[in-house]
Image (cartoon, rainbow over all chains, first blue to last red; front, side):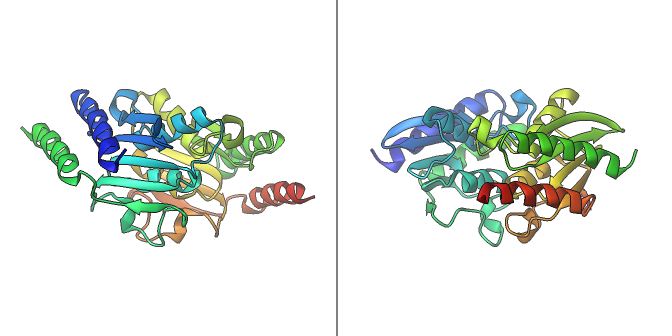
Length: 144
Length: 144
């Protein structure tokens, strides 16, 4: 199964977030081609700034595995993680991070030294146009 | 009530964490001299890297207030927050952050640009020796 396959699923989670009036971000944790954690942004619904898709996908995956570390796993997320989520990914020692759209304003990659774990492999730009289009449509809707 | 008063309570939470075999960190959210969220590090017990004291104190406080933002609140924490927790504090727009011991290895302040919200006022070194002593004792115990 390809990165695009899993990012499509993350995108469908992001669409569910948009339907709920949430900034559309979706995330999955995949281990040996199996989805072991998935979530969409729920900060508004839960009234909780920590309820980003990545955070809840990490928690779900570690609960599934019964351990704190995700070294053999890949996290797919439709938008570049913020510093909080990158910090959580650091602690999880995630093996691989696959990102859809970049987030020049709030993305973790603005910060030095890098917030990612040195062992985390990084892939960016997977279905970036689709991920970005969903965000653009959402924010355009907010302004009208 | 003073910063030292609230940091003592955070320290007692950190001691509870140590008793549970967790890295001893405690955190409180205070709003108008009232504690509206408190937590201790529970990453081992919950098997969840996101279960830092600050994260759970923020979630508790926002649940208490019924809103996402903590602009009128102070977070007290016995150890300098990591990047994840600083990122969460950014999103919460916490009004004030009061830190006990510094964390030169994993603390948020190693990173540039700053991970804190520009409106967050910062106070460091409150009961720093006591906070550090508890950590030193804990890690010394792990090595014996």
